[in-house]
Image 1 (tube, rainbow, N blue to C red):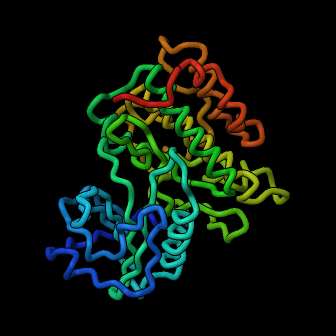
Image 2 (cartoon, one colour; image 1 turned 90 degrees about the vertical axis):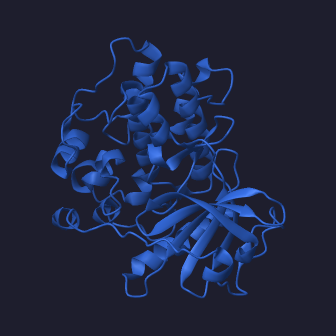
Length: 328
């Protein structure tokens, strides 16, 4: 926990935006790995930058067009600093490995992965025209239960697919749930994900990503909540994704981060106390019994008692909808 407090004061890495076109600014090596389902994407020089979609720790995402087909994609560019800690390179390589493995209608598709001579890792991704759930929540404030039910169903199916592939996402939150032109929500961003059998990162290292708010009690305070030495990250990691979904679903209903009071400063101490020791959930008085039951099943503090994906997929709350589409 001491390491967590120290990392609170570290600045997030911000990348300067290259002004030149990709054809000049991003040389590529012969060692590229385009997806076989996207034979038109052979190299980065085929892509033309249109706009910046977003900035994050260690990367930038562009909207790009394929100059031969006019297809639109999102290009996620990670600049790997050789002076940075090894974990940065390890995490980027792990994300590339996961993205090349997954193929599901509930996961944002990766069409190709490129490594450049300039030390950059580039992911050519499906373009999600609707932005993120976080963006839409800022505009809409909150959603109806019918919309929330559709969101929950699609994320559950995405997690069911990932967990079946032995992949723990580890960072389910509104900004990592993207929306396409049809209003369908898909899971994105595998920067802190883990493949079962690999090397888990300590809880404190995960907190350095800045998403402590959606972490489960056993990830925030593993000594108290993990169940002791008989269990490790891979025992409770899958259950952590369920907790994160529960926080997102409740946030969609109340219109703000739900584990602390509206207007309360979400500093690290407040978040840890709310996640690990908070006893009362802020559920709207008008919420249906099905919604209350679903949220409480997701937000059970003891991960061994928390609802499984199979149990949640059979829950009346997500089976009230006739379609998995989310029209926003």
